[in-house]
Length: 110
Image (cartoon, rainbow, N blue to C red; front, side):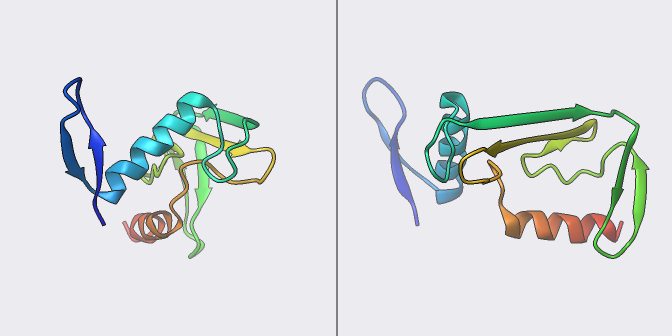
């Protein structure tokens, strides 16, 4: 379902997809340091840049090491992991489980 947003000083309105709005809301929450689930401001961020010293195990048991597989989904990049978790409700910020599952399944088959 599309929603509208105001894009400039003239308050021009354009249609944007829910995904675009959701991404903007996540970015806005990150900038304000509030949880996207409970709106508390108790976010804790962990960043581990292992570069080529990462290690992982896929659900099918396949293991790997080196640069992270390109799964991303808001949890870092090929250099390592970065997560932000709410200390009140435990929500991982930016987590899209359906997208994460699909990307993990695709990556384990590569």
